[in-house]
Structure formats: structure tokens, C-alpha cells
Length: 335
Image 1 (tube, one colour):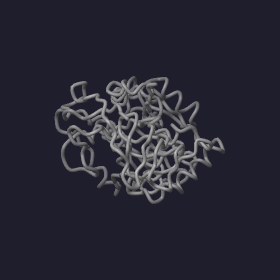
Image 2: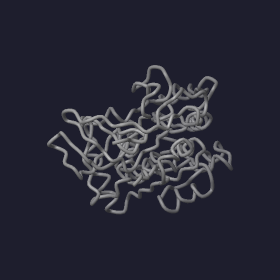
Image 3: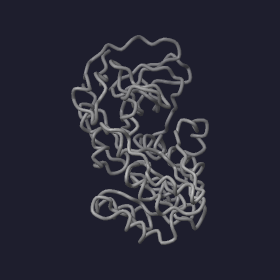
């Protein structure tokens, strides 16, 4: 049996382009011990993928040249040598950008399509949701009545961060690009306010919507927006560094915060988070978030693009700010 796969052909300089990929058909190997063959149904596209394409030390090894591009996914087991996994089981794991995969069952989790649509296990009930949950609650430590600001607020992580902060009794201000996204944050997700960084002055918006300052800043963007928020932080503020999507395709050095001395003045804390550090507690947090969804307190939104072949351009939607919610590819399986 063959698998269609996107292989990393070269390391991007700046924004990835078509020359960085090889789209191939490859014969799948026979299964070894404790392996499964998976028909991949949905592929998760995440900003972190851009970092995985770079050579160099990070929290996870880079994707090697000639290797299948790393990506989370959900799919269905079609063959198994592990008695814990049966043919027909729906599973979540790192399968890569492909339509079929043979993988070890270590790190693979069963998911229930009766409890939630499969694509939701890549969003609110997957890595972005876990990132939001642990990053906000364990690192940001919001308290009722505090002001929480979220950048990249209309993305997969940001939407969940803001809603959890509201559940915890905070005032929540989102920063997003475009009137439609800002309206969605306030009108549908219950944010107290939203700042349109594309069409308004962020500093002025923070002054207007955070009159008592910022207690927690959950940053997905970095760059100028991080600098702007640092001018408004309160004593003992917590800045959660989740990502810096504004910097990922730079061909010049990453722009660090020039206002970092406000951390000293306010005795504030800036701390990075990596979701994999909390893997042992995924089940507990997923159950709590599923409960919030059932109670109508947490709204999930996926942005689904159909077709494996769309991957190179669909990935770039993340960096153009075009996705509305969790960006997912629905894999088209050939007859």
C-alpha cells in the first residue's frame, strides 16, 4: 500500500515555499511489533511547525531533510499488531503530513467520535487546547477580577485562553487582526474587548480597554505587540510566552522586547511554556474542557481546508493571519 506524503526537501529561509517540499508516493512498510497502520483523516496545522523546519537546538528535534513533515493528526486504525488497538479505532497522534502512516503505538491515544467531532481533538481537545489550559492556569495563574490580555486571540490557542480566563472570572481583552475576528471574540466568545492590530493603535487600545493595567499576558505573537503590552503591566504581572508567530519567518534576527525592564520595575515574571511538559495530565484537562463545552461555557471553532495537496499554501494561512479558529486539513482519500 502507498502513502502520499509531504517530505521536507530543504530548510526555508524566511517564509516556506513550494521548493521546500517534495510530494511523493511511498510504499508503506509492513507492521512491526506494537505498531498500527492509520488512515489519516485530519491533519493539524500549527505555528510550531515552522520552528520544526529549522536546524538547531530546540525543545524537540528538527524534522530531517527527506523526512515526512511532522504534524499531529487524527485517523482510523486499519491494521494493528498491538492488542490494545483494534481495526476501526479512532486515534490521535503524530502521523505527519500524509494520508496513511505506520507508527508505533507509543504516544498514540484513542479518541471517541461520539463525544466530539474528530477534528476537535486537534483543537480544543488537542494540543492547542492543552497549551491554553496549562499555559494559562499553571503559568499565568489568573485570579478572579484580574485583567488578562491575549495576543493571537482568534487563533486555536488564543480563543481557548480567553474563554478559560472568562470562566475563571477575569476581564479579558483579545488582540486580533481584522474587524470580523474582533467582533467574533466579543460577540460570540464573550471577551470583554478586542483590539484590531491591523486597523488601530495597539497601545491606545490597551490604554482604553485595560484602564487598571494588565495582570496576565498570554503571548502568541511576540515582536511589537509584546513590547506594547509590557508598557501596561501591573505589579507581579505574569507574561506567558507561548509563541512568537510574528517572528517565525524573519530573515533577520528575532526582535526581542526592548521594554523588558518593566519586568524589573513591576517585579513581574516572563515564562515560556511547552505543552509536552504536561502530557501526563492531558486526560484530566480534556475532561474538564469537554465539560465546559457541554455546559456551553467553551465554544470550539475549526477552520477546515479540504485536500492533502493544499498543505504548502494552507500552512501559510497561519502566518498571513487568515485562519479563523483551529486550522485543520481534511484529508481527501483517493479511491
